[in-house]
Length: 165
Image (cartoon, rainbow, N blue to C red; front, side, top):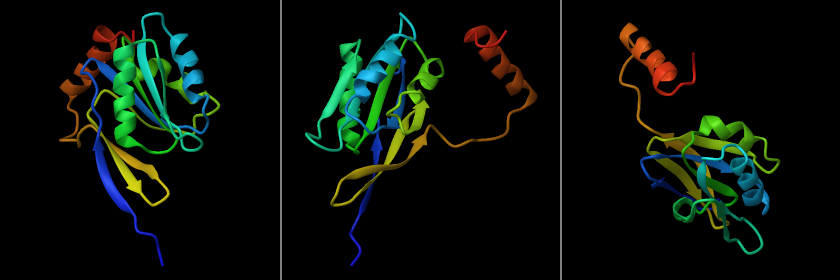
C-alpha cells in the first residue's frame, strides 16, 4: 500500500532590504563552511544562516554575523522544516556576489532560489520527514519587454547597480 503524503506551500518572510538563498546540503559542518564563504566575500556583507539537520539531533543549526538576520534565517528554516535544507539571509550584498562561493562548498547539493522576490516553498511531507519539491520565485510574466524596457534594464545594470560599464 503506498504511503500517504501531503503537500503544502510555505511563504518565506524576510526584510525588504535583504536577499535570500535557499538550498540543500548534506552535512553538519555546512553552517560553518557557509559562514566562512560568506564572511570572506565582503567586509560589508551582513548575513544569517540556518541549516535543518536531517539526522542525529535533527536541530536547526545557525551561524552569521548579524543576530537579526540569523533569527530571520532560523524562523524560515523552522517553517520550511525540510531535512538538509539551508536558508541564508543577506544584507549589503546580493546573491550574485556570493552564489559561486556558496555552490563551491563541498556540502552544498543544490540551490533552489537566490532572490529578493517574495518566495514560496513547495513542501512534500511523508511519515519520514519533509522535503522541498520546488519554489515559486516572484510573480508570473505580464508581457514581453519593449525597446524602452531594454534601455531601462541596461540603465539599471550600468548606472544604478554598477554591474556593467
